[in-house]
Length: 357
Image (cartoon, rainbow, N blue to C red; front, side, top):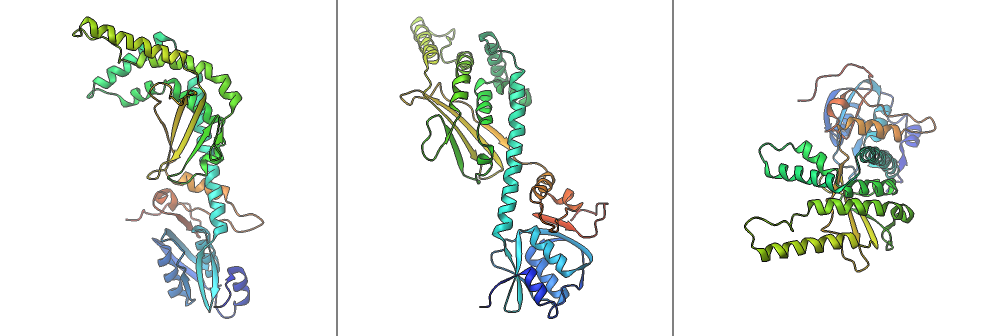
């Protein structure tokens, strides 16, 4: 098999054999990258083919009287691939270098989104009043009312009440001290764990930060936990023995909460496999490995947005260096950002064209 040659070299050496300067025109249409390559080959007579490593991504291709070599370059940039020559044919294959550049750009974007969300959560927590027993009981009462009123429940308001849980603000405080690029680098289905006493596979939490913040969190956690623990409440139809037993249980739970001595903190961040969101879990354990209370609600943070912002940010982060041509985003991406992996318009017209039916 002949040696594979990068596109830049093959264009220079085989310019006379193939007309890479011939002009190409395509009316805007969504198609797979494989179909786009086949149509280019048919229109130009140049033996272009997709390699087996190329995913079946869809693109939006529109150009008018543009040189074939420019169209080929844009196609490669759009799907993170490069052209190589082999036995007189030109194959578009996935480029590990371009994929890595794009991945690093996406990591930067996701880390930035996390930072923005953390700053917002911490700002909201800083403006909240102190968690006294009275305030905790008031919040708990409102939450119980929401839980018993299915028809008139305002989920947005209920979420605001849930956000007052001290464990949530503590979770975001801890997250603010973690390496966000490490979190942003995990792949769907993977998780990363931060701990006070990490194993070789875990990451180190900021011990000084935790030591400084833990007493205040523990105080708020006790008030919140007691206000929301209804297992010890006595109902009117209970006899004296039952009432006494439930009261004793409630006192025991209160004592356990107040006397809890934290020996380990685990902060686990998982990137969901089915959707682009992080699941964030907090766990506090004593020296025997017993968890504080009954555990904490998990936090969720979605990375999803309208697609256009992600693609624009990604191209900004992955902008070619050293005078290389930059892949410009077209107006079509505003309409098709959620559907397409890439889009470009050589004409550079500002007005949007009709959406694909």
